[in-house]
Image 1 (tube, helix red, strand yellow):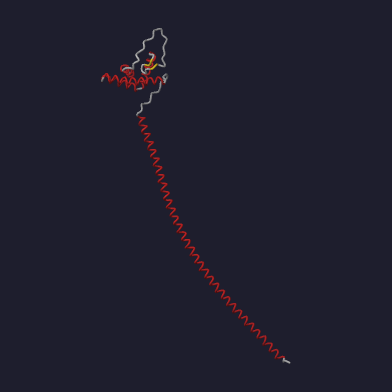
Image 2 (image 1 turned 30 degrees about the vertical axis):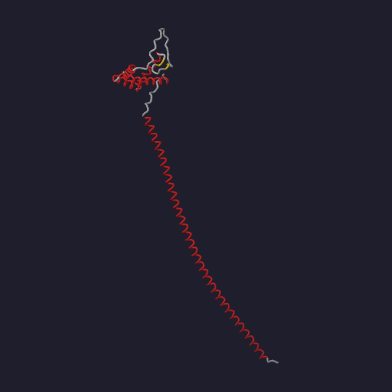
Length: 240
């Protein structure tokens, strides 16, 4: 049979050996854990550095791309500015041409008006107001009578010579004045009333009136145009 003392000693040795083995294993596990932690930290550091470098490279690439894009946009902006300047110049040129055309049209219109005004300035003076009792037909007859008188005056002046120049000028002066026109109208009415035809206008008198009288009708005067003496008498009446 075994001794109890020896048995207890062997039991303690076994427990001690198992405890030392467990401690060794624990220490080994701790060491491995430390190594794994160190490895993980190192790997994390490397990854962090790589990510930082990648971020820097990406930022630089983005900066280069942005700078390139900005240069392209600046070039496009310069082209747009040049095009805008060209269009503005064309617009100003078109406006200048339009203003020049308008000025030319206004100048031509002004020249036309000036020429028309010059022609109107050479036109005869406006007629005097028509008196009450005289119609347009009578004024037309008076105008024709004045024309016949002027033509007759010129013909008689050429035939008679220098002696009739005064009578011709007086007849022209009388025909150009308002009083002479009124005197000629009055005398013309007398001629038309006494004669069957107008001696000045050489046409039938439309407004001829005959007063009732027992005396025989007077002989009609000659239908020849008024002579210089008759026109001179008209001028003398007007001058008086």
